[in-house]
Structures are given as structure tokens and as C-alpha cells.
Length: 213
Image (cartoon, rainbow, N blue to C red; front, side, top):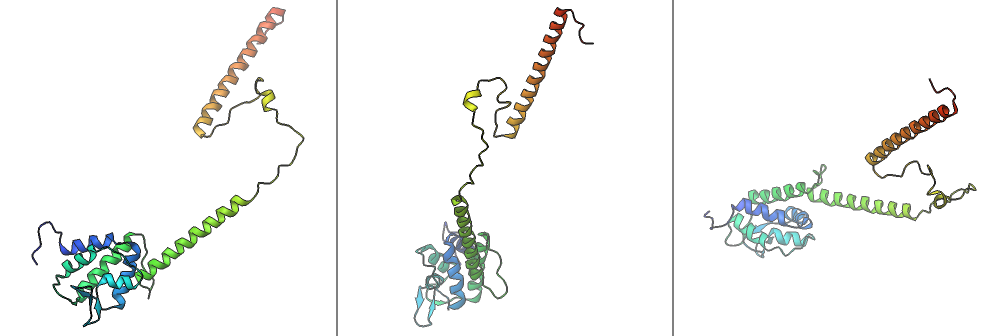
């Protein structure tokens, strides 16, 4: 087949067009090509009763207006007039559809299950899991916080905020910040302890009492 200038190879063009289809259209097209007589070169063939893959997708709930697929399909098959698609052409289309679905994270189907059915099943499981998570979050947020047990103490933060050593260390949201503040507080505490010892020595010397050994 002679390629027109600027066109990709027919198979590559069809693969890229399939990947551009919406997910639900690809799933519906997989079901459609398995249950219908697939043709090329026309939207439908009243003589043979065949339909194109796009119409097969429409009839299986995957309606879309992406006309570029019909162009890519006819270019891939090289059909100039309505004819039945060959087994190789249909197998190639099915392969592109399955690969594109696997790229979406859809697992391989179980025995006796088509890939489109597996995709629908997995999507339903994901939706159910998402709905259950939302319900769990709603229930958790609706629960009232338990009432605090009264201890008879009152909050004296405002009263003692300016008092010495009222707050040993300020709260921190990061572990590295907390470690830095603990290290700084420990160093400050050591310096204060040393100053107290020095003052005690000075008092003892002033009183004439023996100093520390």
C-alpha cells in the first residue's frame, strides 16, 4: 500500500487512535467485536449485516464521536468499499484494545472472562472501595469527641506565661526542630547550673567558709 505524505504507518496510526479513545469506548468495542460481524470501508453493510468497530462500540454502551477512529480503521484495512474485515485485522484491533486497557492498570481477566468484563468488574470494585472509604470518613467525622474528665485544675497559661521556667520548651511540629530546641534548652540549663555553682562559691568565700573541694 502506498502511504500518503505525512501519514504514519497504518498499524501505528490505528494503535495511537485506539489509545485516544475513552476507556468506556474501548471496553465497549472489545465486547462489540466479539459479538458482531465486523466490516471495513463503511459504517454498516446491510447486505452482510456487518458493522464497523465504532458502531459495535456504540451498540455496547460506548458511544463516542471520535471520527478519527473510522478513518484510521479504513486506512489500516485499506478498504475502498464495504467488505468483511479479515481475522488478522480484527485480531490486531483486539490486541491494541487489550494493550491499551492493560496500560490503564487493568489486570488480566480470569478464566472465561473477557478483558472488557474484567475492566468493568475492577472499576466497580474501585468505586465500591472509594464509596466505603467515604462512608467511613463521614462516620468518623460525625463522632463527637469524648468529654474531658474534670480534674479541678484550671488553665493558668495566661497568668504564668511570663514566669521563669513556666514553659520548659515550646512545642514543635517537626522532629528536627524539636531536637534543636531540646539541645538548646539542655545547654542553657547547664549554663544556669554552672552560674549557680559560681554564685554559691562566691557566697562561701565572702562568708569565710571553706569552698568546695
